[in-house]
Length: 235
Image 1 (tube, rainbow, N blue to C red):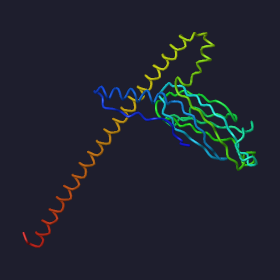
Image 2 (image 1 turned 45 degrees about the horizontal axis):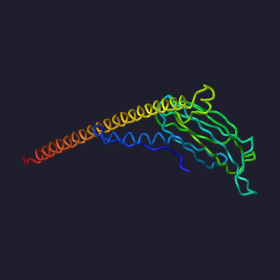
Image 3 (image 1 turned 90 degrees about the vertical axis):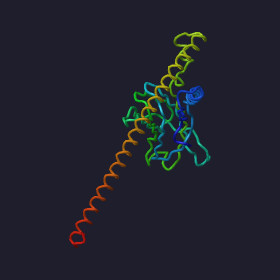
Image 4 (image 1 turned 120 degrees about the vertical axis):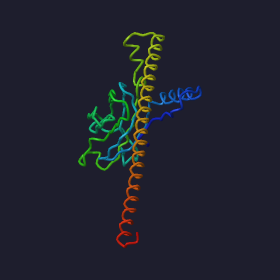
């Protein structure tokens, strides 16, 4: 399975109605695809990492379950309770914001404080002396970002909300999440602009340096030829 999920928003040129409409449409499509479910296989000491682009102050919930390959039945069976998963999450600044040992099936939760690409890594707690030795483990992983991580049935039961009140709350949280996504896209655009300006400035200074070197070499060659001709009394 692919180790990276998500749809990158294409930045349209501002100032045109079509560009704004396309940007809004792409943003909504990207927002609708924030939940990603997949499964992958890992070996005994193997580590799998996933990259998730997350705005700041956004809650992320990951649910997983593991299956161990049964060589006799030649199929995957639910893993034994002794097998667990170690989950580590790093923010865009490479700071660890979550590092915890879980069981063979569980849920991990964290909240982003820095916008950008977060790295989510999982590996088993198996050793060569365990039942998992030499086997393959199938991990089913479901990552929910933002308001998709909320259990609205539980919220409605806890706060005793009517269907209309629950729907209004969902819409409010969706609008808040869309605003976070828009702020994140603006932050990415600003960062890209700064990178482009820095690159252009470096190219300009490199071109100036090349020109100065060529001029200096030309002057040196002319003086060298002049001194050569004077030494030979040709001038």
